[in-house]
Length: 144
Image 1 (tube, one colour):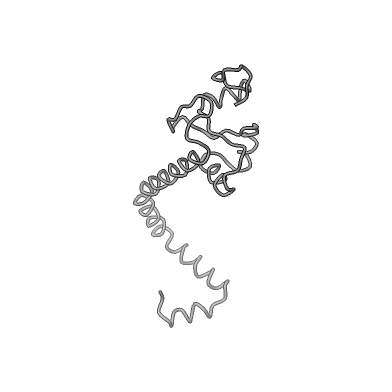
Image 2 (tube, helix red, strand yellow):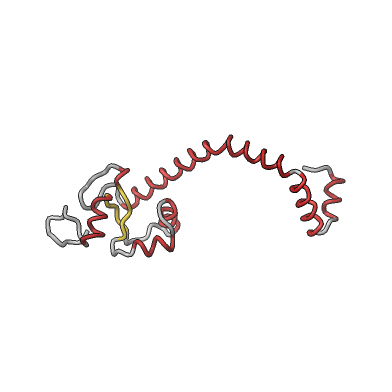
């Protein structure tokens, strides 16, 4: 924190004066500031990326725990193949509103795990999208 005398000077300045002072400093120290930002980015980007991947995987596991951790149609349990399906359809429209992937998972969690969703593998989900049903079901035409 700055010494009290400097803080008093800063506090006596108007907002416009502080903004101008900040702007002037950034113009004067542009190259130094950019280099500092580059160093910080290169030093932390890999670590932040790894942390984000871990958070996203935990969230995905939480979603699967809430909606079932196996495909409701064929029973496959390999996490990498599983996806969240909108039971009544309308997934494209819904994703344009809330986002897809991790954003969609965050939306599910924030909204208290709403009904109307199920876990399907990509194959069953795609078949449901194309044909309206999954071929794994014994009764042809039966909705998943």
